[in-house]
Amino acid sequence: MEKITIGSVTAARGEKKQGFLEVANRPDGTMISIPVMVANGEEDGPTLLVNACAHGDEHEGSMSVITLFQKLDPKKMKGTVIGVPVLHVDAAHGMRRGNFYDIYINDMNRIHPGNPDGFITERISNIFFEEIVKKADYVMDLHSGANILYLAEQVYLVDPSSEDLAKAVGGPWNVIWQRKQGEVFGLGTSMAACSRLGIPAIVLEVGGTGGRYHFLEENIKKMVEGVTNVMRYLKIIDGKHEKADNYIDINMVHLRCSHGGLAVPEESFALRKWVEEGEKLIKIIDFFGNTVEEIKAPVKGYTVGRRVFPLIHPGEWVVFLGKPV
Image (cartoon, rainbow, N blue to C red; front, side, top):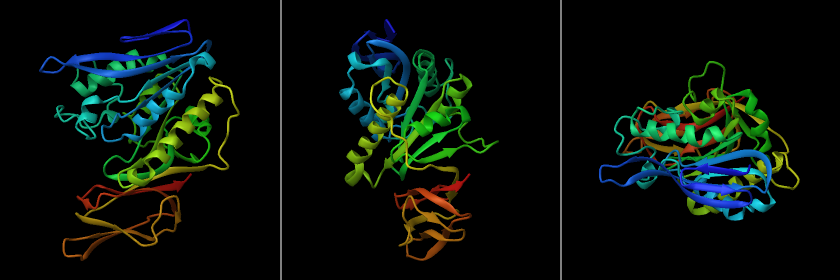
């Protein structure tokens, strides 16, 4: 496009710019803003939005967006890439899932597309959708297991019209989580809100606590390569698009515990592994080491995530298990 403007950012053809989209003032007068990066291609083409850190303790996506933009050359692009490395800045400042100062809403990715007259998290979401998302033809929302979970690489979608985009990520991103018909989970996510606007949208999940010491750089590389592969698929950049060798289509089964305690995985437990119905996955022990609960696979499934932070409260996620579609 000839020129694109978002907040303080204006990028003409062949330019890469960065700046902020203002939302509202904090009590001390400082501005709550959304950092925005734009690479506007020399030639016309689709607009891809890549955003991260809707949850403030999920940093893999933020670093992936930054790394991606360091590599982009808009003079060699056909189309536009918009990057939002940190969508929920105050949540990121607190290293928490939600904004500590919003006492009513803890999760931005359950209230999209927000409300211009709502609480602050809703207002950030609303401006994000009105000023950024609606300029996009495709959306990729980057997430991780945050400070509690570790997730193997997987792609989520809630609308069948986004399946081609999900499978375009390619490479190791061959686990495709599709929302079950009638499932309420996900209705306030970025994917669902984009679906209602007719915009294909997916979520990439990888990493989280426990893996950041050993796998952070590797997971950033996976995300950057996945987004870059989608850019090839959309013909924003030249190069051969690589599909995954195979795809595993799943519905997600979230296994929760009924007892609080410490979560201890079975010795045989591993991610990206098929398990049989009834197989023991995690045990919950009390502070004396006694087993108070065993988490077993309710169906045959594919393990894609688990609790890493040991202390666990009743009702919290323990294992993410993919049931084959």
